[in-house]
Length: 250
Image (cartoon, rainbow, N blue to C red; front, side, top):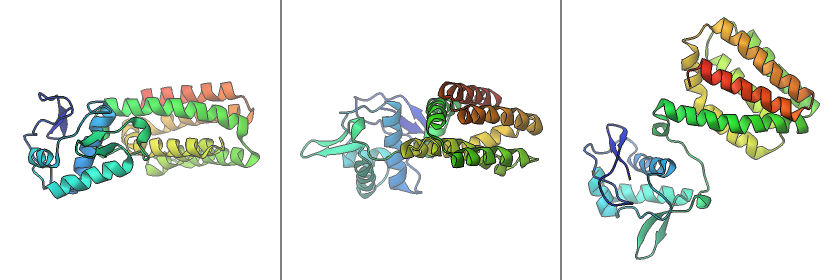
């Protein structure tokens, strides 16, 4: 398993399922949440795998310079999420992925550009499929909502966060048109995690030109959905997101 050093992950030298003692102790702000986030990140990255045993409370407390009560609370949080399980007399183990009952991304899970690229790849998969579903299941009201979002984007004459909000509103309107609440939930979760990075990246571009290009791409998605052409809708969404990721340097 990896350990922390100044907010970065460092390859371990110890045995599988155990953490090497970090040179810097965990910061004192939100200790249980930080410890839980550290473990969660290791699970997400695959450094901790299903069946791996976590250190004991005492070992963990010594490694991170916190009390056993902090470790106990962090483990309880992860147990509630379904990421770890306790086995009487044996310890705490990483659970099978199908046991997880919530989805969380801590800020340090998106610490590197590569993390954002991976999240954008997930967005590409989710939203191209959503566009295809929207083309099959949308209502007249859905189409009006989607088109309204495009019109709102066109009205923004300078870069500020309102533009990013209208952009995300478009994608959520498409997701809502799928009539699948789980699709809408996951797309909303991913998009909100990318919102700030999109805004920051846009600041380095010619806004008027970028807005015009983006509007054409969104309009192509809308027209394919209105034509009830799932294949064309998926292709238009895929093209838009790929172009967008290139423009934003993701």
